[in-house]
Image 1 (spheres, rainbow, N blue to C red):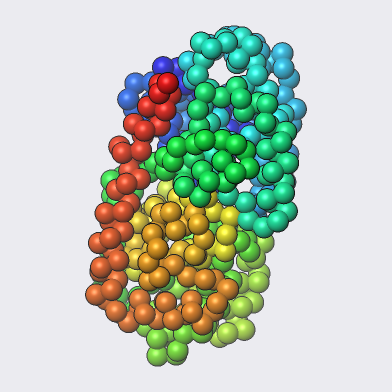
Image 2 (cartoon, rainbow, N blue to C red):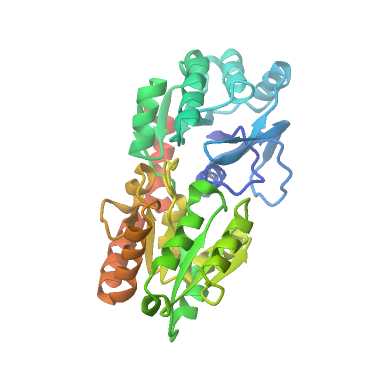
Length: 377
């Protein structure tokens, strides 16, 4: 099949939806399909599959994320693109923009009719009233356009439930695929750095924004008893508007000898970063539809992966209180960390469970489910 993976945002960004698109694209190409990426304002030249950047974009903030929103796409240009390329499948990342992807869907139906299959992956789970209201309004705008789709999937059960309630979409749950074995191999250098260490390594990696919980992580470390804190070192990777606040909190609590700010971690170094962590901590406060960072950390060999107690992260980690934290409850958050730090047998048990759990998201398992979505009547 000739498949267009369509994204309103730019593929130059390293966020979760982009990772999904690239991971799906690599799998589909590996099994013989002709894969094309279709997006807004992308300039990267490192992709093996063709990249079509069909419209410019501008930047906004939504659901705690920075997003690149497409400008109004020319109907004529989209119609000519569809007629020239003659894709068998358009795979749209939803909810999508009325200004680009929705117009592309309409042109695909007008040019190719029912000869083309249009599917969507629903990604979002809003965080807060404003994001929820904005998404509901978008659902009203897209209601007619969604009828042009053949079928949908969602990256998690919570995302599927939200799609059903707000958009009227019946989406089967298919998680985000990751290359488990490749990540395990790439994380080996990080795992080797833990051997013989006298202090457990706690690590966070993500955007330094309020929703990701990095400040709450520092507060929980500060709340550890001194004898427990002396047993650990902490690394915070990432960049964002909270960097100065984090540095201030580290100084205010006297944690300079405990907490290191690592700054931006390139994509190719992430697996080693995760592998170096005895406990990888991702205390997101909400707005997570899945948790690709959790699966990547598990696959890369983090000793234990801990996440914020939100629906998307629970869909990956399960319901065990040993690996779920309320970022807003500093005392309870610190108690969970202290319990994991003190109990190597507990960490080993959790690690065994997470090694098995992450296999459910391996590209060899998830990829065929996505491929089948294109052909399922």
